[in-house]
Image (cartoon, rainbow over all chains, first blue to last red; front, top):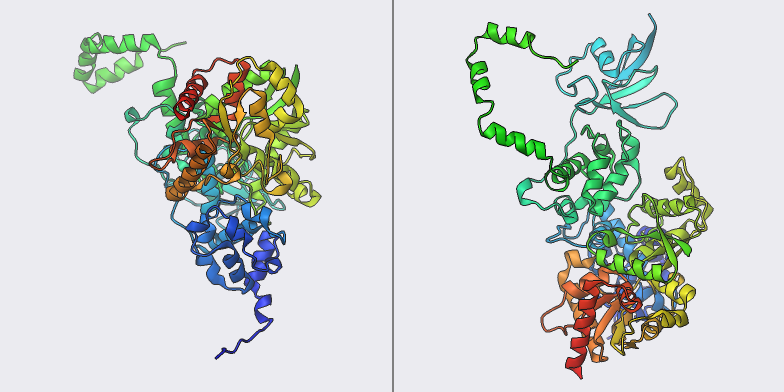
Length: 131
Length: 223
Length: 280
């Protein structure tokens, strides 16, 4: 027996989705869930939600997107963005989620260098992963 | 008497013009037990922030070196909490990565230059952070030679770097490992070890106070 | 002699010093007078991808301001990450309102805009040219099978790509011009894991293993890179059982071919030659 599906526009105006759009400059509603981003993401194997699923949560205004590990595994390589048929640069959406999480005090594991690293590695890690 | 109005921790006082901030505070009745040291601009204990009426800028300076102005809003920063990891200089190497290993937050610098604007010694603080970041120890030592560790840059840094502790480490590494040795210092140390000055020191230690005072007064003073 | 402003970046002045010396020597042989930017600061390495984080653009724009003060119109980077951050910041402040707000921090100086940021690879392709590279080669690579690894920032995002992001060819052409055999391989444009090397070693090891296996699968004797961080990861984050492929920085390969004497490069090329014998 088919279960009842209720469709509503209410979620589409969720403040969370708008905030992510404002910060990233990317329209989350342009995504039609084709999955090309996830297919081409070199880090997808290590993510708890695939890039298209992260974008879906944002479309639904679901703030649980902020507690995912996926944005912290994203390395901003933009492989998703160059493949997206709708021109959504998902790396920017991921950055907006990281920034929103950091501003709310949600942080990944702290950056504690265990050996000498090239400066570019440390600077990148601090900029992406610390408030 | 020519007076000006200053606001110390939000309360207004009429004080004589021409006083330093430190003297104005004492004139207003404050007794300074912290945030006050040499009174000569060297010790860095009296870091102070202030604003001037009609000016958005937040200024930082040493209270003992800055004259009060009418309408100044003043607050003292007697101490800057700053993390300094424990290290033993003799176990460290004077390599670029040493600074970053002990102070990895150097990598958080965004080159905003706020530190340079905050420095009462007019040092190029951001250039020193950048030199530290790329491992240039002599560069850091040179740029920060006149740092008085007042902590004003550290309080304003959006990257939360503990500048003065980094500078101190860089100068120590530079002094211990990178600057050329002065041969006459080693020679004098050998002379001290060999007991060249022992007789004279023993004589001074055994001397009664009056004799010591007389000897002090009669000492050779360079012209 | 042609002068060009040069932004070295932190890594090239410290751990990746070897990448800088040979490259600058080779560029001098090609007729370039390199003018290092006085008092340059860190570029920031990663470009801030949110709209409201202007502070992160102050550093890179300050470097562009110093290029402007040198009265140069172009600035050369050897590091792909420096290229990415500086080129994207230069574009970011083409918007006058953003430029105005950033200039408020650079007070009393002001950046006017218009400085062009280039990378060593584009200098070799667009200004030196493949023919001249081939003509100036003194120590040809003798058919050494070199796999060019592009990574991310020279190719993505699209507006800042120095070549076709899906099918780049510039580095292959440089390798061929220097007398080597270019070996394209599937993972050549896939990310090495970049700064995750500090916090997620496991992720980077998985990436590096794939990249090196892919290059070896194509029959490569060595890998050539354009970025000191790719270089670090590809050397230091190899999982057990990864093929022992030497990794060279593009400038090192250039230095070798132009006849620069650099013992570090000599040993890497030697290692590649040995690995080449082993394969055949």
